[in-house]
Length: 297
Image 1 (cartoon, rainbow, N blue to C red):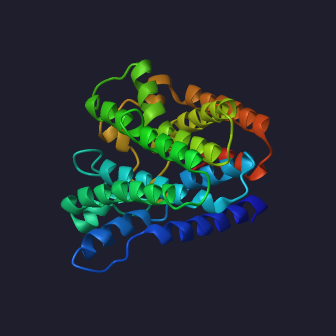
Image 2: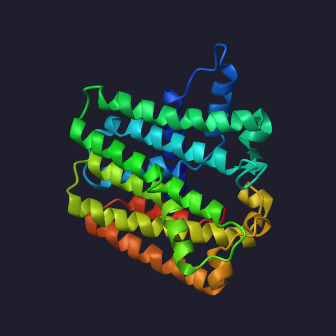
């Protein structure tokens, strides 16, 4: 096993342990909602967004990682809630996620909705508690919380998802697909980069550069997802393939073709890495970006 893969596995385990600290205990009369929330988060994700936040924090010279942990957990809760709702029959109607039955297939559609609601509110509870804890600089924590909230809402992920749902079954224009990619997928990656930068005390100019890198990574990540939807199998991907085709969705591959999709992933990857290297040195972060963009599942 390469040094990077070994370090990556260790960091995933480390981040899982952090997230577990903030998840609800599965007790009480409301035990089922707690179980459904935890099932969603503990489904074996890559922990991409909290990992990026942590590594950007380090890139920008942050030296007290404890400050970042609650925001990492909050961002993963938001990401998990979005997947739970995305899988619902009213959305993508998927039965599998990360190689397991989706939350609504295990707990019912009603608890799929409630689990997502619970995770979103838990995220804000975690960040609010961090804000009033007295640890770290309150202004940088407030900036991190604001950017995560903004990128998760109608100006970010929810806005992108809304346009995606509204236009399902229609042939999308370049402008529409670009909007969906940048908000639906890119927004939470931008949130990870910006929150990490703010918590480390980065100036606005550096934060803006890192936001550009995050936007490129998010866009390339979604293009790769479209490519994998065509080229992978259920066993490799852990979720149904040809899901986009089943739902009559325009993708980067259907709009531009496989050759351009592959080429654009490469160029976006190169630009994002150049920006990261201009800010500082973090070889693990550089390898992580390459691994995400050029993944095969």
